[in-house]
Structures are given as structure tokens and as C-alpha cells.
Amino acid sequence: MAPRNNGNKPSSAKIIPFTLRSTRTEQHRILRVSPEYDGLCLLYAHHALSRDKLYAVKILGWARLANGQTVAILPWLNAISRCIDLNDPESGQSQGYYDPRSGSHFSETPPHHLAALDAMSHYSSTTAVIQEIPDLIGSHAALLGDNQQFLLEPVISWRLHKDGRLEAQVADLSLAQHSPILAGDECLYPVQQEANFRYFFQYHIANQIKAGGQIATRALSQLLT
Image: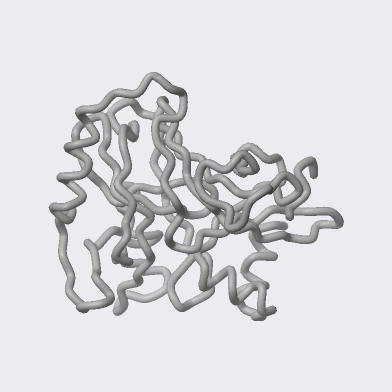
């Protein structure tokens, strides 16, 4: 368990600095999210790494924005990124979507996600947290602990607030009373509000770090210093 009061990625373990536009404009405010259950990926180009390859990263879900647009979303670096944020080929440019099971490429939001988001849009919420979805892609939060040691905590769920913020929830194991820990559990807390929170990683990079992989560990150390 990470201390509470201490103050992601294709096969390559290199850290890719997506250029993120502001997520706080009203037209891009997230209204609802449909979780991605089928393992679909976002494809993107990154010319700083290669001009001949596309990279794939797992999608967390599909978001309906205040302007009516539906976009794929995923955790990257220290926030949630929308596919429309990836618009620079030198630092990450969206190239559509990919189904690793069938090998097919596509460019439109899957119709079942559109239908789910259309249905959810008919229901309003008066609570501060209007939705909580499980993390199905193995996201981990990297935190800087005592003596500059880094810690990795699995993200259990994401809570969508009325203002459009998506906050990652990790477990305070000292408060856990049930196993497994599921979305909505009282032991969950928003890791992005912790002063020692740094970045998000997907499961394959987190597993490399946990196993002591030199490339992944070096990349993380560079981010945390």
C-alpha cells in the first residue's frame, strides 16, 4: 500500500510525451463514459520514435463530450487523454482504432458504445459523482515514496465527476474489509489528489517495472526525478 501522506505503453518501454490540450474547456467536458470491454486499442504515430511504425495502446473507454462528440479515452502520463488530444505526429498523432483479436482497423466509435452513451444521456444525475467504471486495462499509478523510492498501485476504478473530471481510484489496504476490492468500495481514494502521485502506466509496463526490467525501471526513474 502506498503511503497516504508523503508530501504506458507499446512494447517499447520508452515514455511517449503526448501533447495534451486542455481538458477543462466546456465543450470537451466528459458527460458519460462507456467502458471498453473488448480490448480495443488506439493506434497512433510517433515520428520521434519511428516514421515507419504505428503504436497501439489499450482504450479505457468511450466518452460522450458536452459538444456531442464521442471519443476514445485512456490514461496517459498524469491525466486522462482523449484521442483528439493526439494531433502532433512528432509527439503522438491518433491514427484510428485497432481490434487485436481480429486484426481489423477502424476509425469510427463502435455502434454499441454509441448506443450505450445515447441511452445514458437520457438520465441526469444530481450527485457529485455521476458514474464509476472499473479499470479493465491494468492501469497503475506511480507514486514517489520515502527516500525517493517509487511505488506502483493498481487502479481499481475511475470516478466521473459532474464537472467532467475522471479520477483514478486506488485502494488503501489498511481500510479494506472485502476481497477482491471492487469499484465503489469505501477503501478507495482518488490517487491524483495525492501530493506524491506522478504518472499512470498500463499493466505491461507496470509488470516490467515490478519484475525489475532495466529499460522500464530506468524510464520510470527518469520521470520521477
